[in-house]
Length: 174
Image (cartoon, rainbow, N blue to C red; front, side):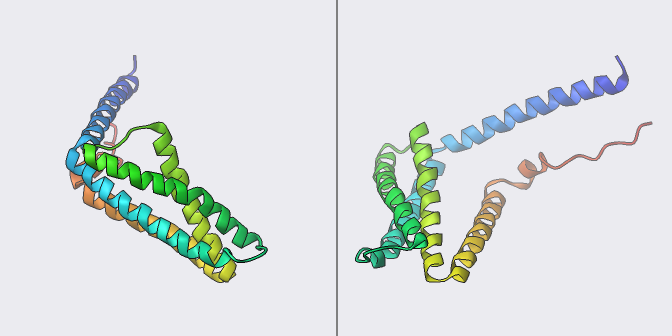
């Protein structure tokens, strides 16, 4: 076996071990009751806000005899998201009572669908008012997701955790 092949195997084993350790750290953090309680509080805020936004956005279309495409997309998107968001709010109360979060696959799917369709509904509502407003909301929504992700990672993972993912400098062959 060549020296490079041996090094490669050592690095591969190290990377696998490190990946397993990091995965376990993430699972341990997610199982922390304080972390779960905060996640539930933030979810309540998000779901409640999206339900309120949906009700406000759909209200003008309730008395309209016919809807253009953007208005129809808005109404249909909220017809999907509002019941799901309401169910998730009720589930959050149960999670709060049990002091743990649900790990159900249908719940995870419902969370994604509810939030995505609410975003589509709000975007379509703004689009109905103005093409420019719809585009601005879509772009700013994507930027806001990036800002939140950046802040979350900065708050939740310390420098030693993040440094594990930075590429290491290779030593020059001797």
